[in-house]
Image (cartoon, rainbow, N blue to C red; front, side, top):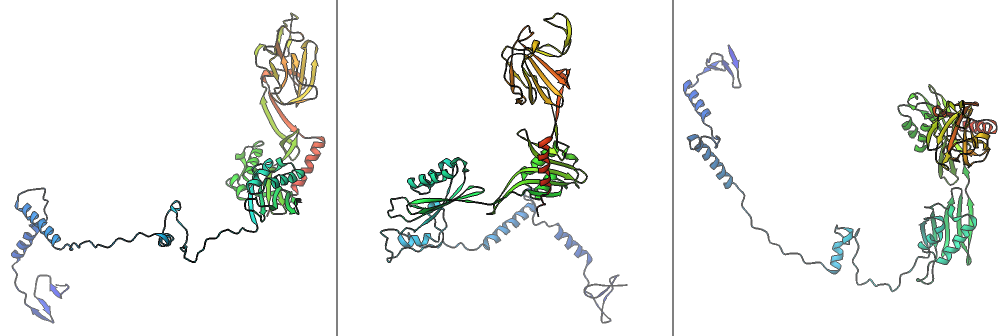
Length: 491
């Protein structure tokens, strides 16, 4: 059997090679000599570890190899050339230094310049005087309205002209109404003497969002012209899908951040925000004022609505001097709070049957007795209206408050009353002072609470109230609600 190699054909048993059908005799090589030569070369290690077998023939062979490699490296190293000596450049001065510095890169604090500038030549002649511009257009920022004259003086207007302009503006509107940061655009004219302040030729500024003022020189005095600016108060209405995040979706739709926060607070007063589904549609209407000059101002959120799986309609409406949120039927949110103690003191008699300390027999005690120093302030436990303030037999000086929803409170034995009948009071407001008037054995407050005219224990009651619009307030609410619902959605 024959095997093909790189040189031709060989037989598997070592037979003579064939070349064009004729055998070529091979030179005989002793097999044992090749094996011994191979083993001998394999046993020789030219790079042994010089840290082992120190002093042995193998170690000396490795040391000789290392020395030979070092000698070859030294023999093949490049020659060391002597240093090139060059003369030092001359120090630049004068025009040469200016020219070189214009091309250099250095810090501004060290006199760096931008771009290339030419050094002066003999043809450059210094000017004896510098010509002035015929007019200067400047801008000044108003710090506060009353400081308008000072702002003009800082911009270069003479003190007399600055005061005159401030007087003209004050004749049209209070200077205090000018907002800090108002920009003043000034035009200063030519002056005859450089030591004098430039005269003011023209002044223009935005006094209010809907008013611009222009001051121009007419002869030896100034004339002020107030230019009204038309304002469009059409609200901004934005609708969209809640998606994964109501806040992010509303912001992406262009709703201001404060309006989104107000929307979330109003919705949270009626339902958990977590219940709003991704497929729910939000509807927001925000106050907007657009000037004819292009400026836009956004105000408060006026309407908050949800439609789809979750439905809710809320509108901001002012009642009793406060902005509140009401649904489409004019019903406000429920508010509840614990009945705060009207006076700081010690409870001496609780609600229920007891032996009367003055009459001497058992009878129903319809409230709480709270011992406190004479003259201690008595505060309203909840917002309400003074239903009665005056003398009430055994109660002495007495105040009764109506809180709505059939709830009312009474306060007896006062030394002095601090409110009048019909007055509106807020929670925590002082309505009187502790005393011992009427049928009393010492300074204390008798505190009663009624629900639909029936006395109940004041210490176990939580006030809960719901605002309900009616009459003229409800009619005004419905008119505003219809007007907002007619606002188109923004493009």
